[in-house]
Length: 252
Image 1 (cartoon, rainbow, N blue to C red):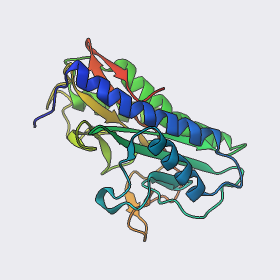
Image 2: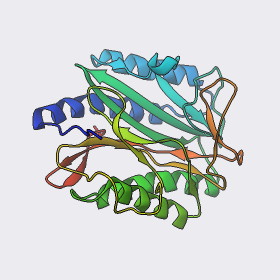
Image 3: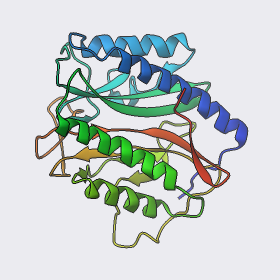
């Protein structure tokens, strides 16, 4: 497994691409209100990305038709924007990628629409808290499998389960690079596999199910739900390992 080690100047280029992602996500968060359609939100983010000199990297990636993954309620990841208009009590996940000067950015949030249930608040908090807990606990020298195991235990301690068969990933001159970083331990030994090193840049993205971690892909070939049919949540940041610790690149 060849995991790239980035020079400081390269990390700054990745930071610039990710800053645009963060701005687009903040824009969508501000406009997440009843009555706005998923396509309107997608177009708003696309215009923001283009106006900042970047391109929306998800558009056309593997055949995905839009600039933003809009994952509504039961859809956990990869939701295609439609004419659906948000309603009070919905929850919506936004996942955005950018490309700026050949370098990629990627991050995601899940947001409630108006007043949401306590259960949905806890579901969203699990994804967000898992992400920040993992970032705070990353140290150069730990193994990626230890990081996966840490996230899995945090999610299960909250009473949820991680979505299987999808994962975080390296990022750089391509939107998806090595390594793959599941939100659960594969195998039985977390003390195996590659170690986290200074200069590595990767995306962590907890994807949370309520009861069943097995995914199901809907008829459009993109929307991913849990087999339990219940609502899910998703959060993501791009981080760089600098001076032995993880630094978030995908923030304004």
